[in-house]
Figure 1 (tube, rainbow, N blue to C red):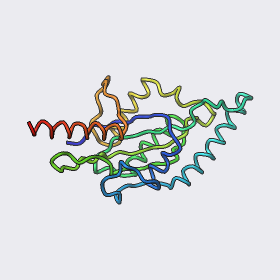
Figure 2: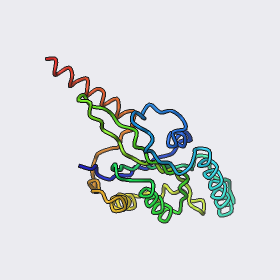
Figure 3: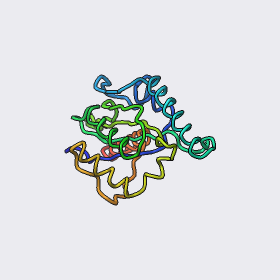
Figure 4: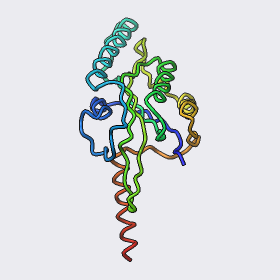
Length: 200
């Protein structure tokens, strides 16, 4: 059974570009990485990010007469659940939706099919997902975070499910997304506990 759709947006970090393109090694990559897809290298993504950020910072200065505040979130990152059938082209449709509705610029798209875990029976559980890196400012220099209200995020979850042809995650769910390294620790602990129970 295919997983439910989900998109999670958080503040981006510069190392995400290298993680996404697999130009730096990652402990999360434990399966064949040849099916991964990325639309541009880390260097090209950073060049595009910097060019777009400069335009948006200039728009902010023109509008306010002030320099862009240092504390403003300039880089946002989204992680999207996928199925094994999804491709970069599918994720690009979500990128287009975000660009249109948030007036942002997507600077890197990556589809990862090489992360996950192997359970106690040797069964592979691949975590199919995508990463989108984008500007945290719109074309006028306004923070995108202010647009990410509850109503927008609920609609975004619905649109992502429609675009990907997946079941939508439950509305009002209290489930929280956990980072890959935390998930791996939990999965390892569960495997150890299962082995201990079998011994007794």
